[in-house]
Amino acid sequence: MATSKRTRKAAEAGEDAGQANGRLYQRVAQRLFQDLANGKYGVGDRLPAERELAIEHEVSRPAVREAMIALEVQGLIDVRVGSGAYVRRLPGINDRPGFNVTAFELTEARLLFEGESAALAATNITDAELDELDALVRQISKENQRRGVTENADFDFHMLIARATRNLAIVNTIEELWRVRSTSPECALLHAKARAANVRPVVEEHSAIVEALRTRDPAKARAAMRAHLASVIDHLLFATEEQALAKAREAVASTRRRFGNVASI
Image (tube, rainbow, N blue to C red; front, side, top):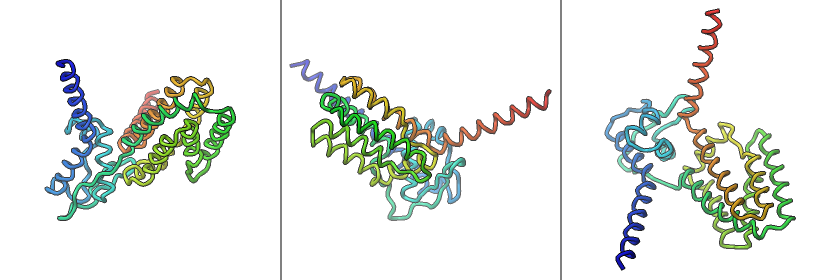
């Protein structure tokens, strides 16, 4: 009985911690919203860099990035490539911080659900479906070479794996996750930024998933899918403004060092 109580308390504590972590970006957004409302920043002012805000609020940079996107969706700030975030307008009397599913939350959910989807699909997928996945990987490669970004083959690839589970509930769940990807303003905005930064579906990662499925090993299929979606999170981080700014600064510093070395010869 005592063990059961301890287990229940531990579970409740874990749940509370998970909920707290899940609200981190919302708390940061609310604080920044309040700073704007209180006049700490004026229209046209540049907000502190993500790294500075992360230290100030004691959160991760992804949490700050999600908070910034929530404010950008509301038209309060404008995040400019290679420059940073600027105040676009101050909150009005009727403004309140609003939140939708973020791209990081969505990708984390996809990692969990689609990882298990791939594991189950590994035991049911047919040779014909594997050949179709190979064809879709080739189509992803072709789409990546087009100027206008389309991700139809990527969607078809993941949905084919979902259907290979032979479980309609899984198919419907994964289809809904992909729908949220385009209907949640936060998700749509960050994915648009990723596309603008030339982030594309990685062909090699999709090929690795197919090869894992071909072994009919659920563990390998799960690991390949989770590795792919973990990489997607990294790609989304790469598309953030402050990382783009850091790369630009490093490029300038590299150029200065190179010309400095030439001048000293």
